[in-house]
Length: 74
Image (cartoon, rainbow, N blue to C red):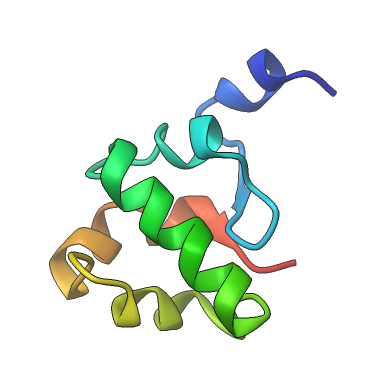
């Protein structure tokens, strides 16, 4: 599967394996936040739940709510 296949509206992004470019397709996630997400998951062995994203700097309830239906951890 190539990256362009993931741009569909119904594509679910695995936040434990997504590339920086895939993370940036999420509303409110740019270069800096994508880098922080990747750094967090490397330091913590991945996310145990999508809610854990709120532990990442700059991502709160409001930001998470913009794309929670587009992400998963498996």
